[in-house]
Structures are given as structure tokens and as C-alpha cells.
Length: 58
Image (cartoon, rainbow, N blue to C red; front, side):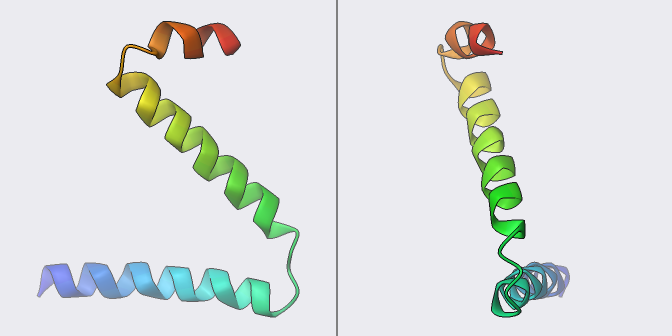
């Protein structure tokens, strides 16, 4: 039951996020895109040999 509850909570979070967009809260979109892109850069940077090149950008 823990997996179902966890999945339900994640879907509720996504639903609230889309609710913001439905209420014309488009100012949230750049923040979310930036956070997601930085997360992807950090995950890829730690998982591959690209880390030295990514660290020089920051």
C-alpha cells in the first residue's frame, strides 16, 4: 500500500502544478523549467565523464 500512496501523492503534486497553469500562473513555468534543467545537468554530470566540462561552466 505504500507504493500506491506514494504514487497518489506524486500525481496530486502534478495535478496542483497543472492547476497553477490553468489559473494563468505562467510565471511559475520558468522556475520549474530552470530547476528541472539544473537537475538534469547535475545528474548527467555525476553519472558520466562529462563532469569536468560541466564544472568548468559553473
